Amino acid sequence: MGLVIIFALVSLLAAYGAFTALKNKNVLGAFFAVATLAVFGWFTVMTLIESGFPTGTH
Image 1 (tube, one colour):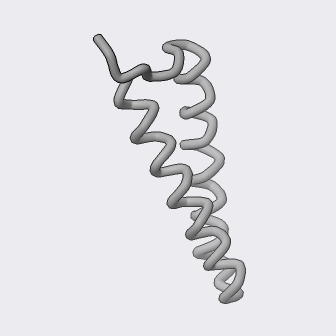
Image 2 (image 1 turned 60 degrees about the vertical axis):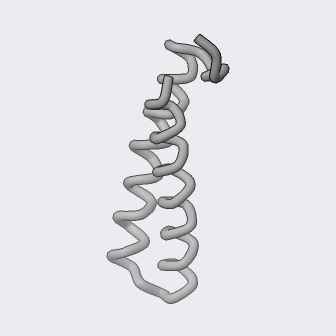
Image 3 (image 1 turned 30 degrees about the vertical axis):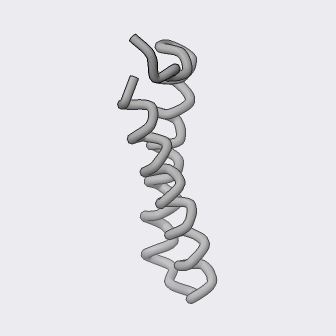
């Protein structure tokens, strides 16, 4: 269940990085940030669908 949280945090950081790179007109950085956002965002969504939302209880 912690995998969903890690994937979500990486996705949020990639979104911030993409925004910052686009703001600074850094094309290569924006490309890699958007690619990372797409991959880890997809992993986050699919892990949530497959395993469910982490509740924090056992």
